[in-house]
Length: 335
Ligand code: SF4
Image (cartoon, rainbow, N blue to C red; front, side):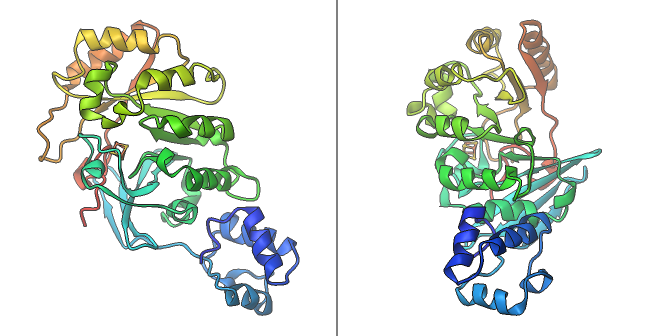
C-alpha cells in the first residue's frame, strides 16, 4: 500500500493504528508532499524504529517512475507510467518560458468514447487512485518547476470523482502541495451526477468539452451528450459564480464542415452569452486514422475574432508535442 495519495487524516489514522503519535502523520505528509522523498531513509526525523512500524503494517512511500519518456521538438515531454493495476497512462509536461504545465490522467483509458479522441478509441482500463494522480506530478522530473496542472489527460475526471477530489485536496491543502486552486483546471464532458459535487467541494477551474453548440450534432462526436445534455450542464453552471478567481472555459475543437460554420458561431455565442466564461479553440490533431479533418487556421482565426467581437473572451490553444502524439486528444499509450 502507498502512503502517497493519503490525506493528512488518513496518514494520522495509519500512524495511530501502529501505536505512534499523531504528529508523525504530519511529518510523513511533509516528507512525501513537500520534500518529495522516495524512501524512509531520507526522512531524517523519522528513525528506523518508527518507519519499521509503518512499513511493517504494509506501507511503502509509493509513487512510480516513468517507464518511458518522449521529447518533442518544442520541449514538450510525454511520460508513460504503469499503474498499480498494470494499466498504462500518460502525462504531458509542457514548458512555456517561466511557466510549466503538467497534463495529468485520471483514468487509464476512458468510457466516454469521444470520436475525435485516441484515448476514447482505446476503451476503458481502470480508475486511478489519488496516489497515482499525485504520483504523476511528483515524479514528472520537474515537479518544482510546475506552475499549473490540468486534468485533461487520459480519462474523464468526474467519472473518478472520489479519487480526483482527494488528489485535489492533496494539491491544495497547506499540509500537501499547498497550491492555489487557481493553478489547477479540471476538464470534463460534463458529468451531471458529479459536477455539482466538484463545484461545491473545490475552487479549481473548470473546462467543459463542448465542441458543438447543437445537442443533436454534439452527440455524434461526444456520445456523453445522450445522458449528460449540455443544456442541463449549462443550467447548473449558471448557478455558480465564475466572475472572480475561479475560471470557467469551454473547449471547442474545430472540425472542417462539422462545427465551424456561421450558424455554429451564432449558436455558440447565444449559448454561452449569459455565462462568465471564455472559449478555447483547439486545432484538431489527426493521427492519420481519423476521417475527421481539422478546420484551417484562417477559419479558426475568424472564429476567434468573431467570438471576441461578440463579447466572449476567446483564445486559440497552441498545439504542443504533436510530433510525439502528446497534443490534445492524442494520448493512447502507443508504446
Ligand atoms: S476527450 Fe476526454 S472524455 Fe472524451 S474520450 Fe477522450 S479522454 Fe475521454
